[in-house]
Length: 253
View 1 (cartoon, rainbow, N blue to C red):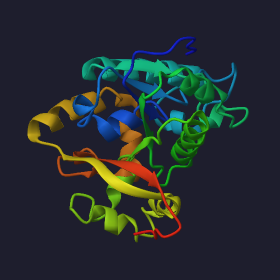
View 2: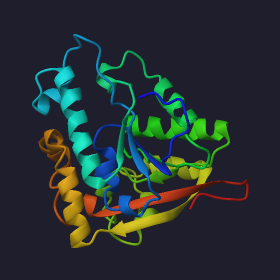
View 3: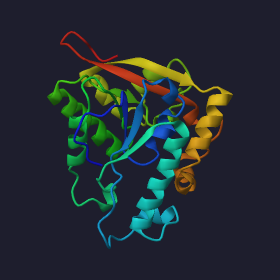
View 4: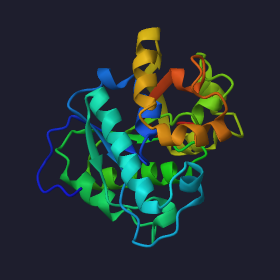
């Protein structure tokens, strides 16, 4: 989705795929500076005739084109429910990408008005998420813009046993399974909790209804993430970090 002029958004959330931002941040969204846009990085149409990916076939689709069109419609419904704008970049999902270049993300970030708050995913056990975050950090630094805020991508980060406790960050800094992306971030940056939310029943209901817009994805996600939609599951706590570069005297915590 090309843009030739500065946008009016105050907050832009980079969602690697359709559903990542809503799974991770639906509870915190109402408190972010508005207007807000959710920007799906890997939202583009697959090349014509591309065989369907394993994931999309498991989700019940018959073709790659059907998967992209249906998932885009699901995302539009969720964004409308949450009162945020949907933006879709033209990179196909990785199983369909001819190369890994994120040129569309570069072009998009260059159009943002100075001072736009950008949120990027941590990348817990998700290489596409990690690539998006690193790419955004590099480009924003080049533009002289502030570092993005980093959000815990759910349900992935939320599988930390201590996720719903005040010790989550300390545990993430030590956990060998869930924590490597966070530990890598701490090597170069100091991370402080910018916002943390344990959802109330009312907030949870709103989030659950938004997440259920992505109906094509839920059964397949449950295979790897179990009862991730349980009221006390990983989606019920959300976390955003702010970053500051480390100095030579800093040491990772």
